[in-house]
Amino acid sequence: MNPLAEELNRTIQASSPYLFEMLSAEGKRFYYPSKGILSQSAEAKQHAHAHNATIGVALRDGKAMYLPSVMDQLPGIDPDEALLYAPSYGDLELRKAWQTVTLHDNPDLAGKAVSLPVVTGGLSHGLSLIADLVVDEGDLLLYPDKNWGNYALNFVQRKGAQPKLFPFLDGDHFNTNAFRQALAEIVASGRKKFVTLLNFPNNPTGYSPTEQECQDIADALKEVADQGINVVVIVDDAYYGLFFDAAVARQSLFTKLAGLHPRILAFKADAATKEVYVWGLRVGFVAFSIGGVKPGDPVFQALTDKMGGLVRAVVSNCSQLSQHVVAKALENPAFYAERAANVELIGKRAAKVKEVLSNPKYAEAWEVYPFNSGYFMCLKIKKVSAFDLRVHLLQKYGTGTIAINDTDLRIAFSSVEIEQIPDLYELTFQAWKDLVS
Ligand SMILES: Cc1ncc(COP(=O)(O)O)c(C=O)c1O
Image 1 (cartoon, protein in one colour):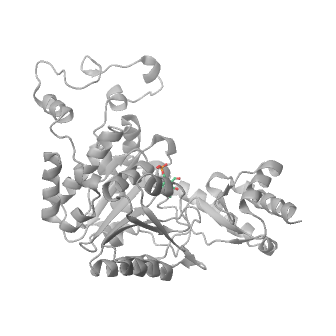
Image 2 (cartoon, rainbow, N blue to C red):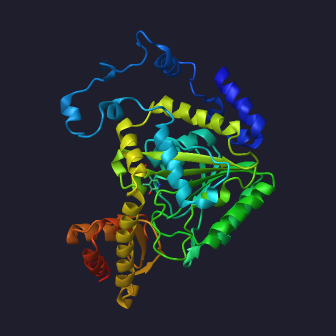
């Protein structure tokens, strides 16, 4: 074990022995190389008055050297802000700006012991960091049967997690009973640790829970922790804020889990990707909370150092240009109003979808899973395979949708203009009729 890892582990064990138990072998091994190139160049930045020949970038007159063919495309951005390396933890200004937005949106987090987020290369990368930190081969991962397919690749294929799925929906609601039942089975199995991953607004159904459902989830997890089981909860907030129904909880489930129990390690994985409408810029975040410690406890820096080390090892650091652009957007006083305008637009599309689908003729072709948020809605196709329907709809009617499995067809209303929505469903219906006839 590297002495730097040992030091971090001692810090973590002193503050939160349960958190230490929840780390994977890799998580225990990891550390930020604070005595290497990065710290030596940081030191040189402060003290090298004569010459600074530390870091592997090219400088001219003390600024980033650049090609005009690059910088001409970025008017108004300083070459240093666009081109130099960002810290492995992410740009501090951006990390603080994201924390400010998170607190604005989730006022219940105020005063709770939550880490400053680490910047990742999009949410997928954030999930992979968490997986590296807490998942050993064979660890159980509990997540809903309606889920984003990449979880299987990230957690199951890459890390060897053992998946356990629970039925996500019960009629028009989150299936609290099924979730509780799955937790009871885990307790009965004698496992001392497991990981659960919940994503709201849900991909693919577009369902988000009510305040009461969030409370029920948190209560159920706390009961398990009370029985001496270590619980890692990953809250995937990819589509956070795209809420279209008054009944939907406005704050992230993470707010109810933060600080809840010394045996509950909760991660908030989110991203500028959808929340700031910058899919390809690849800016995501991971923050975490553990119960039983105070804000500012050294355990926060220690686990953050392990995350910084994981970023350093794999991508070294995330795009400086992307981080700069997102930080400036978050700090712009127009940010909240601009974001609200987009949410309103996508919400109008969701309302249009509901209106179109209220036509009783569609009942013979599909059921509609409940949706109240996010980018997607999902049809449960009757009588024909959703895979076949997708292909036919595409080939005959030039309309692209996603078949999630044999019954479920996912439609991203987020990317369809409102006036095209009636036609989209009409063509889907036509295609279905072709196949049943
Ligand atoms: C539920 C969910 N989580 C995470 C992601 C990944 O987001 P990113 O593009 O930031 O990696 C997506 C993207 O489709 C998603 O649907």
